Image (spheres, rainbow, N blue to C red):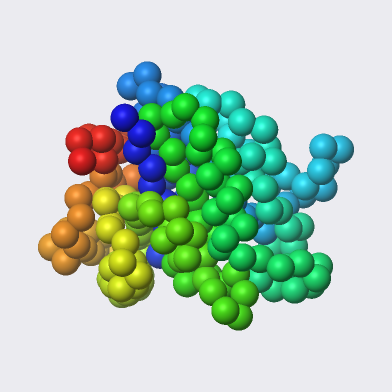
Amino acid sequence: MKKRFFIAGTDTDAGKTLVTAGLLTAANRQNLKTIGLKPVAAGCEQTEDGLRNSDALQLQQAASVKLSYEQVNPIAFEPPIAPHIAAQQEGRNLSADRLAAYCRGAMMQPADLILVEGAGGWRVPLSMRESLARLPQLLELDVILVVGMKLGCINHAILTAEAIARDGLRLAGWVANHVDPEMSCPDENLATLETLFRAPLLGRVPWLNQPSAGAVADHLDLQPLLSD
């Protein structure tokens, strides 16, 4: 069994990394071999080992198959801005083909579950010619959508799901991640999304004062993904 998915979010602060780490942790608890990849990341810090991104480090730590940092996050930018702008500022070219090649190399490792986390929302540009949505197309990955539960989430979630379908990809499941503890009518918003989405709800992650991969994993159900 080798399950591979692309993790997308309704926006930048939907909680993709936390949910991805939670999914990896939940799979680890079932003694599955897991890999987490963050092919492109902006907002990295200079360290003695080079640029490091906190999200990529979290995935590296959560995965049971230990890869080098460069395998987890091959393209890293220091400023916390859109990747294509960071690339322009450094005179570098970003392309989905290049990112896909990096991912394919890491995906050759034996693993039961491989999760590739995107950056920002579904249509975040890599250049003026293509968006990061091209990456899961090239890798032929089904998509898991992380919905940041807050005011406006229904519109963001439905538009993202429509874009995923328009790009010819399957929405394998979604996670409701409560990013706003003061959100009005959270149950009603969740019920609306459950009605409108055809994909299974993999979990409802409550607002966590001290978020961790383990705490998130407690609220996730991998069975719809593993039984496909």
